[in-house]
Picture 1 (cartoon, rainbow, N blue to C red):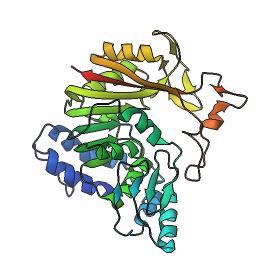
Picture 2: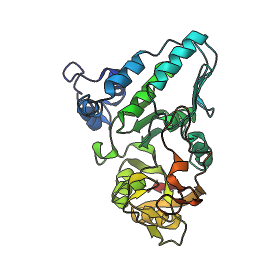
Picture 3: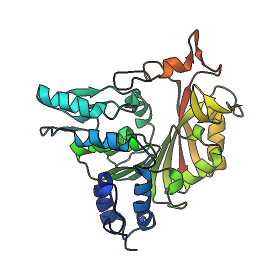
Picture 4: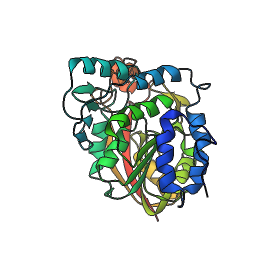
Length: 337
């Protein structure tokens, strides 16, 4: 299948380099079907008519200053560039990146500028890194990847190709800001949902779904879709909100939980594992369960809106503002047979 060129389907300028790289790698292989869909998906995902803030975010991206050559950090907690730069450049860098506020996933650091994000996403990586199969040489899909922090960590762990998908344009442009400095081949964050991908695309050696399942009305549909993206023997890494309880315990908050919308079902870890088995996965393991702390998710100068502390009962942090159990997250691994 010969993909359409950007001249036939003009693409958002931020994604032209992604198109060129993916075309070179995918046009003669099993991903060619998805490749043919990308021009329309790119234009929908970064549509200025749908997202009125896009011009402002694009201006911020365009104002990023050049930085001196420095060592690239993909295995440290703060993904980015080591080294230093002038105070004037630091001020320009800070101003440009603040134009992409709020920064939720991270942390990052560029030549001494610490992007102190809402989430200490490195803590989640530390909890799962030793529990998953090695990523060396693998093709990885990260569903609901946000600005791609964990995608960078996957690349640093040896993955050959990392594809992150997220429908939020701001997160895509935050990734492009980092990529403009790190310039790493084989890593892309694309503006779309899992549902926009071809239904059957069993080409990924590992699929990550972190912080997505509880936003799906039909969890089995989501798990089945994830399975259909995995090659035989491929690994799923699932991270999701859970509750304490027996294997059949389930909380249905009717769409709102900890001031988050579209939260439908919070199972116990055991029920989550059972769902994975029903979806056809094997070798299912619960590798971590823990309550989210106020140190892991909090307001910072890079994310000045409400955060976890405002989502909890002010007199009892064991409960959400709605009276449900406070956020507890589990990480599970499983394999497609």
